[in-house]
Image 1 (cartoon, rainbow, N blue to C red):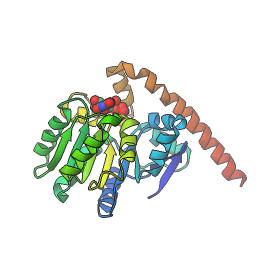
Image 2: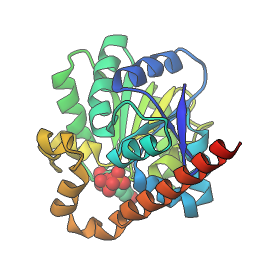
Image 3: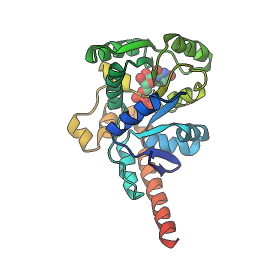
Image 4: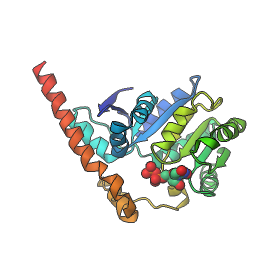
Length: 250
Ligand code: UDP
């Protein structure tokens, strides 16, 4: 799969449809595969957190969850075809699970949210098998019990809603231990969106690339984390200029 390397993070240049097709390919292969839904906050975090950067570099798929990545990819001359939001992928993939008979486990979010999200998805996609749901936590002392619970459920696909970077590190840490799971993805606040606990921006706002602003207005405590956005834009622009300079002088 083609990717654009943005500040050391590989972002796959695929549409939602291509991502789903690639997931089907991965599901047919042995072993557990990791998918991350990346936004500029992830990329900036990965600049300081080497472990998180390794996790993203080792993941089989890193999808462009944030519009900032789509904009930046154009500066690098390797445009991403579209945004592939995790909050939409969770629906498409649940639909694919129902069609293909893949069993889905929902882990994380506040108590009760994963179970409610599972019921909503089942009502939307008849035939969808929810292997299990559990709020849990990323704390190490819970780790083994949670892995055991997921393995006992014989889930094929795992959504982990612990927020970044904990969810992505949790998946990477448990890659070997999750015996039957074939695909695990960090889904951030997606279970909250499914249940209506959190509300996505209106479609028009999403199309304008302003979903981040809607989120900031609804959840102002995010302002500090969102300072990563201008820092990301500056760092990515600078890196892309340097790459252009090198390639034109080579
Ligand atoms: N969460 C959790 N356990 C934790 C920390 C977070 O279950 O220890 C959940 C939280 O309830 C929410 C999700 O993780 O459902 C993170 O959502 P957020 O919107 O913050 O995700 P991000 O912005 O990191 O994608």
